[in-house]
Length: 613
View 1 (cartoon, rainbow, N blue to C red):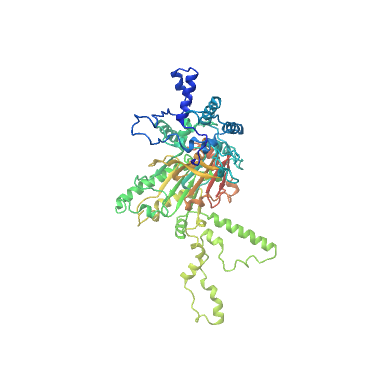
View 2: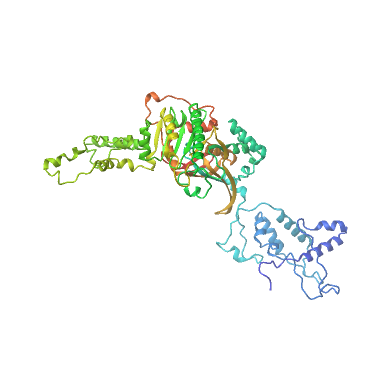
């Protein structure tokens, strides 16, 4: 009984070797040449003593196992079927298989006598083993042929072959062109970036000591090397690897190696259990605050001189973004503070800081516009807004006059029942009036915008603010974190963490290699733009990115120049010499357009961007 999966015409290697030696002896081939008759790429096989040999170890009668007898040696194996390059090869093989054997006597009666066909078999096996081209579609062969298993070739049972990685790369290098060559600036802070591409990120791993040193030097000197337009091998491109190290650098104060000082909002659990020797030492807390005040003052001086484009102040309650003049379309210095509370806004007003609530102003203006439209149509503009407080009261943070609190109850005197009804006290009336203002606390709509010279007053307010530092809890006594793209007094140079991973993902035609690059840390706008610029060239204009936003900072994308007065509309230009590349400066100079949302996904196809916010 024949074993399933084996060809009836399969010959043992011992028989094939015996045929070759016999043919070589008949043709007068020397013994040295006979060794070259074996099929290239196969190991030499020795048949050993026969079964009836008297000196055979272990005695006779025990059948030996053929080491070459496995499914891969038959022409029905998937490996051999995939190497058929054309229908002509299959026809030639079937013609060879179906030819009639020659009946002879003796020990060679089971072999074919046609040596020409045997030579053709050797040539066919050699070509099948050396062939590297895989067919994209399987070959359909008649199911009447007993050489193959019939169930593999029934209707609907053909198996698709896995396409080569080169095929997937060729397909993804020519995607449809996207709409925009650049994406809008995102002023929110990111905690993690995840880039994925069909091309490997191995060039971003394990930089050489010289490349790492060159990247640090370029960052400190604000030098940017020009990348080649077409990089064939990113691993052998020193400009790319140095630029990647340069894009990972940022400056921070304070810096405590055992603590991760970003993010600070809602990070009590992360700080719990960590050593904090300053929490019970008032003198140490004062020393840390003095150093922090020097660093903050240094940053603001660099900002005014347009030598630092922007910086972030991250406390345990709120985040402040300071920007130099000319950025995000603003003619002067700007500062955005989020989230805020009514108490903080009252304290800022008490210190003489003028500010606005840009999101509520937009809401108020849209409401006024709708009221005008309704009045033009003859409707009552206040009919749908009865019982609601004016947004103007919330925007300016100014309460209504309390001089005549009893005026609303004068009608009770006319009725003579003023003594029978209990009137609310002044505190209750005041809380009722401030209800709309209090409901904004800790929400995106509570973002505060400070402009011009009032930003200097805001700096003094932050330095002297008692509630800036937590008085209790795991962050007690710890100054806020300062983050900037440029160096300043007391700053420490930090590096974002990056690692690459290669995985396989299942697609319709099989499995495809998917490479990923993960970057973690406080990722500022300039780092995001520099990384995308590098990957745009290194990944052949095709990659996808998942952007993980620090949610309290998403609202920092609100426009700041919509309501600027005409006298302020002067083109101050981008701050030169601030340490950023011209391409990055060109992006952050444009007015913000994302509103209170942030970028969540970024896709590059055909060197064009699409994004989701």
